[in-house]
Image (cartoon, rainbow, N blue to C red; front, side, top):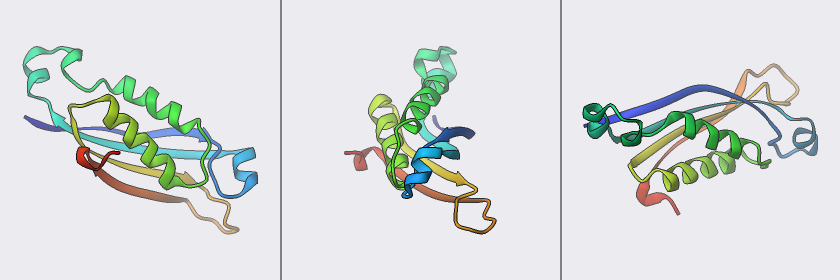
Length: 123
């Protein structure tokens, strides 16, 4: 049975950005992730081994967020590639990665990148 597992509102203090100050000082980011997979076996077994362990997924996202990058696109793609690699049962993944209060001189709540990637697009 198809299902979507969502982990929303993850917040990380990270050092991503094109400006050297951003990578040195850091800022807050928010990540939302959506993973499509067949949940039929887990629905019947009630076993963690038969599903996508969202605690493990969170840890992997946290590890990728700790690696500085210039672009949100790059961080988001690293995250989706890693999750697809580590969880073969996931057929499609979506991510929204936001930089909170970007340093653009005016009040801006967030700047985000959002995309979906299917297993056959992961390289």
